[in-house]
Length: 214
Length: 214
DNA sequence: CGTGTCCTCCCCCGGCGGGGTGGGGGTCCG
DNA sequence: CGGACCCCCACCCCGCCGGGGGAGGACACG
Image (cartoon, rainbow over all chains, first blue to last red; front, side, top):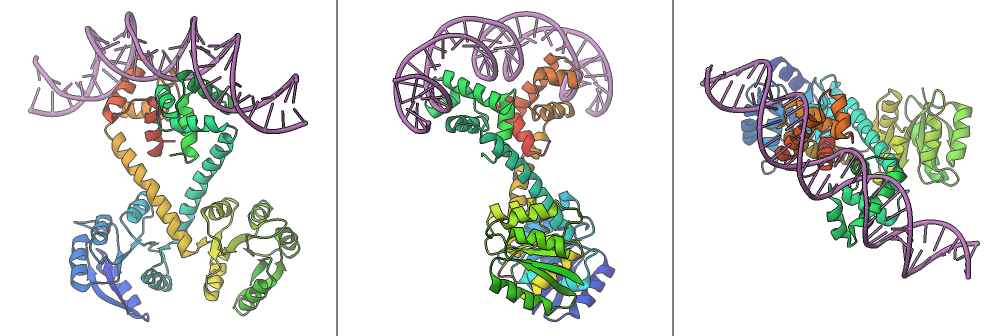
């Protein structure tokens, strides 16, 4: 039996979810809360496995409530369920430790399935969120690839210098770090600039940064 | 009826998948292919809605096959189905245009569900992949937040200058772009450096870059 | 063995970047 | 009104950056 806590400031929404979930096999709604503060006390009182969490609520919002819940010992898994899927919301929710992010247009059986999945330890995201995460990842992977391809034209030593530049280091620093004269560093930098068709060391730093060179 | 093409170099795997999928409602396996080259010709011949694509195959691998398929007019949706979930594979597959990435430990009913979801236009990822994407996003969101917090100390004008620096632009460029004297730009840059505790404009660029300022 | 590439380094120099000083203007607030 | 910010600008100084020219040694490849 998966113990679920419902958190939403709208009593009607809670009632609907409660009815829908209690009808499902293996799921029991053990408590409800109308805001983040109540969610925390209710969690302490009823020890749910899963918390279905709304975001826009009075007193304590869903994000901070999630963060506080996840900071506890034996924390419940939190599934955010909201209408607003801004990047802000998604990032903050995931950062706060949510295991799932669902939009309120999710169909009842899918919500049930999401709860069982999360209870089994899997993460769950609404398709639209998944798509955005994929696009975001692909986009930065694109920059990564391009940067990598560009840096491939560099010799090993130039590569090291480029990396040092991407740390924001000055030529003198790089010289001591790599054990060579400042003149040599400058020669490498010039070579890098011409090879990559850039003007500044700043641009080198940005490119190398995109290539994933910490 | 969702038309499916199976692509895998192992005949046994194809047979198993075919049997399992044909038993499902609404799904018809219309063709099979043993490598990427066959996958392309089979796609042209049978116009499937969904291609279940393995990665490690002779002649043409699954990634390039996916890329070529997606480059066609009216391309099928591609679901990658593989045992190896390296970051390399996942990123390349998504970049090649795959709508889904499943591991071969996925249960038959879940594969069926994944196919119907993708046919409906939704993306689909194995839980482990989703988790990795989430972690990756959260990690870079951390740098994002820190950078944002730091940049919050800047005045609006300084913010603009920082953004320009993150483009790799020179002071003179910034002066003309923002319609002010070079002296003013330098004043802003100095102010930014002291406020953020940095030494170089390069470091400003890196910080602003982390903050998502394109 | 010659050629090429890479790494190393020198000197010179123009220009940009960063710091300091000093000053003008505006708004907003106590 | 006097401060407190913020924005704007000019002048000077100096150090770092970037470009040019020149040059030597190591190593590999044909």
